[in-house]
Image 1 (cartoon, one colour):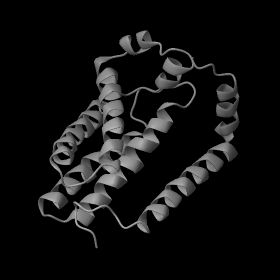
Image 2 (cartoon, one colour; image 1 turned 180 degrees about the vertical axis):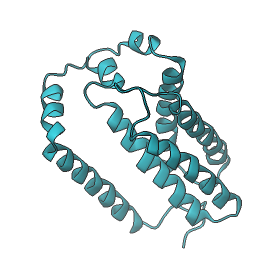
Image 3 (cartoon, one colour; image 1 turned 120 degrees about the horizontal axis):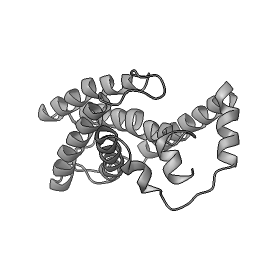
Length: 181
């Protein structure tokens, strides 16, 4: 077993990478075979990358703006936390910052309804998951249970944030319009 300040054993890394790669492959194949997969593929084929249209973000409600900025910051900081050394001052300060960003994302999402139907969507299940898992991850590290902390936080980051950022770029959504619309 490794301590929080030691890097993981080399044999652990390929397994994690393979799991992430296979998860991505399964997600792409599932989406491609779904009824909306063809619509998304046609929209993606006609997409043209351009400078971000930040005016679209400026026209959104404050809840959407806070949600978007906090989510993007949480994804960037999350990758740094996962890739960096653990147990150091940077990790602790950045970790608490990430927790606050995750809370901002979750709480702001409660004020985002609509998506064409004026009520919460299935994506709000991730809000509930975040509000449940985040305290568990914090409690685990405060109890010095590094393994549980790692599982809770990586699971929340990869399962909640990384996948959700991909969902945010589906054609017809705001980030799609900002980057490709």
